[in-house]
Length: 258
Image (cartoon, rainbow, N blue to C red; front, side, top):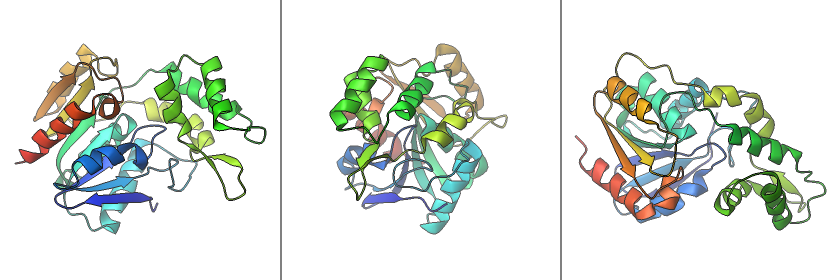
């Protein structure tokens, strides 16, 4: 699959993989903060953003999408950053193609299964919005507020996927049907070999519950060169809720590359 992507900066290559419901736009501020030191490739993953839609989506398929992306852009070896779903894609890719990954940063996710009813709720709400009757983005925001416990920042993040087409009609950039049909695969654990030697930094948000204490032990067992960093004031969207600390962590970890 030919993925849409943005390219920013010059220097060693960093490929950033967004999370579920995300897109390349979400990482522009991080890329612009480091564009004088690194060359960022920001792809939209399948069924997200401006990349093609397909009925299939799982971590093996997305890892192969990324391999095709490396080949298409002649990337021989790169740093990886993956957030949430994108973190699991990075883990799958490092398992299959360790020779292509210098180091990786996995943001607020572990290799284990995610149990999250709110993801299903968000999909359900988006599916139930009648785009033919939708008058404004504000109206969609109100629907989310009424039907979920999502805060304003989360609602705005989700509704970045809502756009007007050439006929001024509202459309979703997300392939909602494919995501809903494959949500068990998206929340599933990554099957890992006995050990992974790729140097890996796991960054967790102090206000997030996506990486629990038991999962930290699992990470240290499976990853020979793992570090876990907690940013206390950050939520699940670490790069958005604690940008300065996150960018400093990226700078420190990748500049010390072996």
